[in-house]
Length: 357
Ligand SMILES: [Fe+2]
Ligand SMILES: [Fe+2]
Image 1 (cartoon, rainbow, N blue to C red):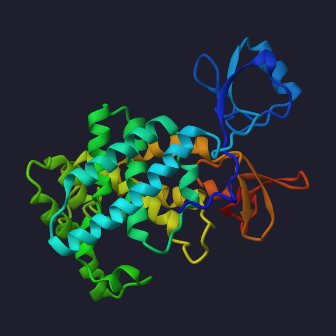
Image 2 (image 1 turned 60 degrees about the horizontal axis):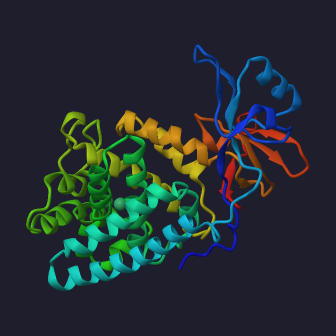
């Protein structure tokens, strides 16, 4: 079940007329000039001086983080997403058990679940924050499948795919690791795999493809996401070492959602201590092996979820992220509880460890 006790409030981005701005409100998006130059960066906490400048530049509206925090427990859309999430994990878990017994995938179960995830992601929007709190180690594959499905649907929405494509991408992502149902559980639960086990692990892509290909009428595009989500643009992936132009667009989206969620859950020895900052940095490091456009769309949209979080640093101090370092998110600017602002890019040994709020 979702544990939301450490996570009582979520940010809400609203448009605010500059005449109603007061010092202390945080900008959710950068303010640009007519010729597209950044005048004030995203995440800036406005001062009277900034308000005066905005007024003198004749800017009438800006996007800000609402001063009134929203409680997801009372936000029906987020609550609905959380219900769908929990239900989906149970459905996927049972479906995997059935696949082990019958070697058949009940497409309708997965398609309905993917549809529910897609609908809720589209309406709840801010589900990324919710994914920080889900249990990580036990039943990892089921949570991971649902997380990747939700993230892939979000990416597809950000890329402006039409609704039926978003559903297909979400379905492909929900099924992307279905081949793991064919692997011995001890392989799935091992933290580090030796070379022999890793070769066996890699087979989950082909096992998944073989299983899903037996479904009558399944689309080739959905199958591509299952078989090719570990392929990489430079041909270094598996199972077929496909190059950039041979990897299906859906597989490229699933790959990015998969990498992000994997990096997010890698610290599963510290449940609840997850860092999207670390995950996004990992993704940025992989940018030459994954689709650059999809990756940049993801990174840009994710920046909206990164400022304002209360975080713990690796020296145990806590603070609030006030300005995002887009190159290295875990080296962003953090305002400590005593009011000091630390630019972590100037402090070589200090970085963001995890999100607390
Ligand atoms: Fe996989
Ligand atoms: Fe995966």
